[in-house]
Image 1: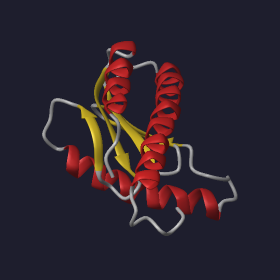
Image 2 (image 1 turned 135 degrees about the vertical axis):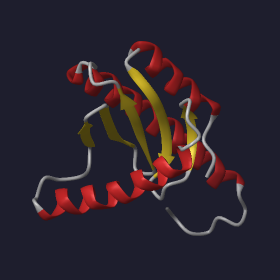
Image 3 (image 1 turned 180 degrees about the vertical axis):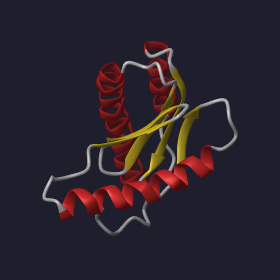
Length: 138
């Protein structure tokens, strides 16, 4: 799956709105990097770990009757890692400094996740319409 260039633009806008972010990436729910705006070269590892954490989070919300997955926040000694739903096919994962305003992080990342979800869904719809081998519904 490839995402539109708009996904990278959305990641850059998010990092502009939240200067305390140290990285942002959009990934498919199965752990493939769609776009990244991060200085490190660990994007593939983070995307794979995000998919694993997403699997646990989805099972946890299901088992506790909390509904569909929305977000996951992890706080470490040196900052935060947060993952947000981005439609049905993707997730947004960000890393942030410990001084980030967590409320603002949630507000901005939820908006970015929604926009990324729209972009990814649109790209998937275009792909399905133009791929003659696509015979199964998503």
